Image (cartoon, helix red, strand yellow):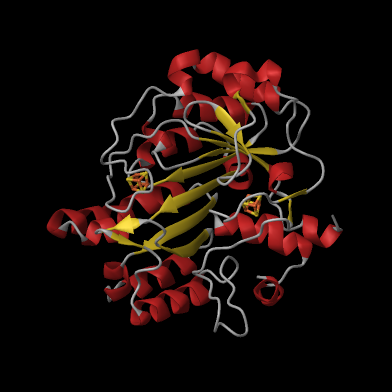
Length: 329
Ligand code: SF4
Ligand code: SF4
């Protein structure tokens, strides 16, 4: 890997999926949080001490590592979130938190437990602004939106850590007159970056992004190009492919296994959404530690289910531009 390409990676990351539960119940939730009765997770099964111990054992000797608390499922609503986040942070690892941010009080308990200069540099918050959910809920939704903007975002942003505001673009969000003002407001805050994203699941019985009308599609592309251009690059000739299409990167070298390990709800370990599990955190002695693979490996999946990973771990490090990609498919 060249020096230039290695700058693309944010470093090694272990993604933890602590539980499937979430109180917000967005209608487009990928995990159908509203329909699933949360099962016991691997942390319930083996206990928090063993879970933390096995994760630390798995990454022993690798520095720095980001421990990312991931969704779907709101990690800060798990009783294990706070003690685990503190443990990993004290062990010298960076922390990333995916959250709907209605739990800002719990996240603040974590942030305020450490010195500000450490938090500023070593914590990142991926804060989902679920405006689509709020717009669908009338008066109650207006209150939730107001609380998100006036209370929850400032509560965490004042600790100085990087906050990325992720907004799934539902049809109602695309029509909302205030939304671009919100995006401009996020841009003005020194440590906050807006990151609108297209819908990628079923919403009101329709599959997205396929079900966007041509007008909605235009608006989505405009918002992505204007406010989230690093992650969504459009080819020079979008005739046969646009950035909302799925990526097919089979056989291309991918660096994901050198950089990411996902620890799933039941403890399975895998490198990316499209790959198989290679072990379980419960039986860490059976896994080669640390299991970050040294060299890139050819993608085996027919479809890359996370275009962010496709771009950042396969295309960009191999200098495969969107135009080159379009020529190769
Ligand atoms: S906040 Fe996330 S996990 Fe919770 S319901 Fe919404 S999309 Fe699902
Ligand atoms: S290209 Fe996508 S699907 Fe293939 S290995 Fe990389 S992240 Fe996984």
